[in-house]
Image 1 (cartoon, one colour):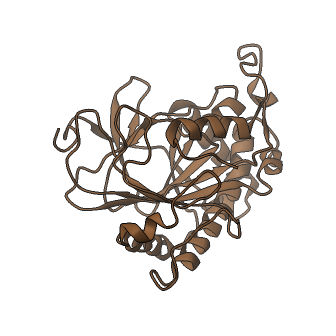
Image 2 (tube, rainbow, N blue to C red; image 1 turned 135 degrees about the vertical axis):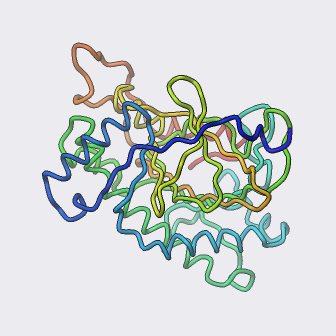
Length: 312
């Protein structure tokens, strides 16, 4: 199949969440933003975040560095391959959740300073480690700015989720979707739901993200300029007693150029107990899940998607 079935999906805008007044510390605006977020999470599972305060030059630079990284020789990248106890490089086709290997390659990085991290030698890519560490810290700060809104949206006190993200178990991924044809049913990344709490994805100069609507139909995301697409994962769905959606999505590169994507997975500590919160349980919504340690959930997800990888 050429072009992954070009023209088969429509375009749609996501709900917009403006953080400007929340970031300014206005309590009424924080409550209003939480209500907007609750609606987006219960109806779509995705939201476009604007007014986030992130200097877009930093996003442009991380995209540039992702391109530079993936242009490195294969031998250089495979020298810091991702493994059972390390982060690093996953080559093209190294991830698989469906019938075919996914048509992407990726670099993974964990918390700055972690012994699991591996970087290419500075002589091969000057400034890479400094750039990805700085971007990681910016995204981690944005994730923490969002936490009060998620707590309030779930009917809890604004600081409820803080305890599980001190520190967050966050992962930065620099993904490369090369141009080219695919087999029938093959994707850049297969249709899936994220395992974790939330994912932050900067708007992309090359389109490719698709989301599955409640009707079952797929739509391409019409991106807001200089925004972050943010989606809930299975962990947040479980925490919300299934009130919030963890929505299936996929990616494909229909262009004739390289496509890069920079998702940041903002997740709780591995020892966090995921138990539906009281604010999402009532007579019409009885408790649907027993407590689950996040480590067990994450390990099962990684075993399904990355055969050689085991989170530590």
